[in-house]
Image 1 (spheres, rainbow, N blue to C red):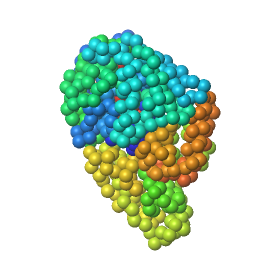
Image 2: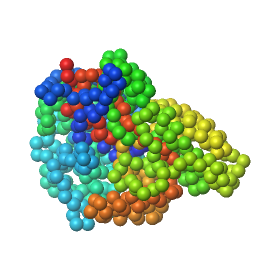
Image 3: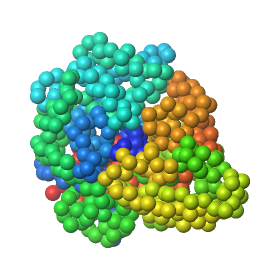
Image 4: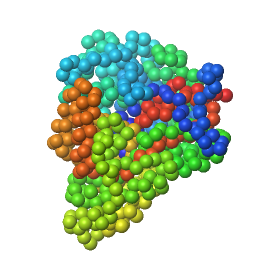
Length: 523
């Protein structure tokens, strides 16, 4: 997604997915000082977090795709950020890559891994004072499943008709097939609302650390929920503004109009590196702009064409130009940061002559014309497409780059056009597979269909041992590397800007960075 722990689902699948997909609060790991060197964003050890103040956050988002429904399409990071603060999720990503509790305190599978029992907190309350019950959780999950057409089938592998709530604080979730990572599949996307809620045009009670004071398609104002069951938030208020243009987000921080700007460009970071007015949060290796080819559309229905397009990529030139020193080359697998990524594949490199030969064998000896769609939703997407089109010209491909409006890209282009620039922001391989790579995936963006891949994934999900399961997942990715529909040329660091006094911002991938309830201001 092509989206923020999901493939963009605009939302990385917001590439999408879901993309799903990504929420432990971590300290800033690297910030720029006034001389451009790395400096810690942490306060002196003697300084305790301070309470009070308002955080102004400029997040990726467009008013045209704004939503108040946490169960539909997560089209804006600005909306996801609000949902993560207002509603509780069952589980969150942990610092070690494992799953940690949130609304669910513990979970246990049956022997066949197709039924999971989750125990819920007993002290969680909605902001209207009512207790959070298992019935509310099951209602919310069923509503997410019912809205699969909007949310890229985020819970498609759960059989919620056969799931039950045997008591006030227990939910038993059935899965359609064995599912060894069910708790992880619920991370961050399982936002819980009161049973029966359908109208989200007005503020809906949540059980999260903040509550809505006011919201519009462009701006949301949240205030601290003093009755939240968790660790007390430090900030009095959080103001979230949806800003589609990444440079405008960066400018909001450098001009003092915002305290945080999410997903800014490497160029903006380079510029801010000479200023004492900003910090840089680096999320290493989580940003990715793959070129996506649909296997059910000419000319990409021919594997020789797909291989030629991969061989045309000058990966180092793309990484150097797009990420400006904040990236590394990749090898055509869509989640290279995932622990299941195979380590024994040869690095694919540029080979113009072989690419030309493959195109000729495919009947395109006189050349080929295609349209490469891209946008400016995330910094560098258009730059990547323009440079790659120049590289394709060297193998006889005329690629017209069409820059589409950011407001509608993820609904009009993503998973629809034959050739386009995608986005991933940290989605796990298993989440991406469920949403976009299985033959019956709800958002199969490359139209990838392979019985051996599907069967291999099912075997992996039926394997309780983590090491063995990761090995099985690595095995099926080799087929994807050989014959899939992605040109994954590199990964870059996710980059956020913050004012000097902002402390405790998460620096994890995907949805992890949306959970900012322990941020504070050092004034």
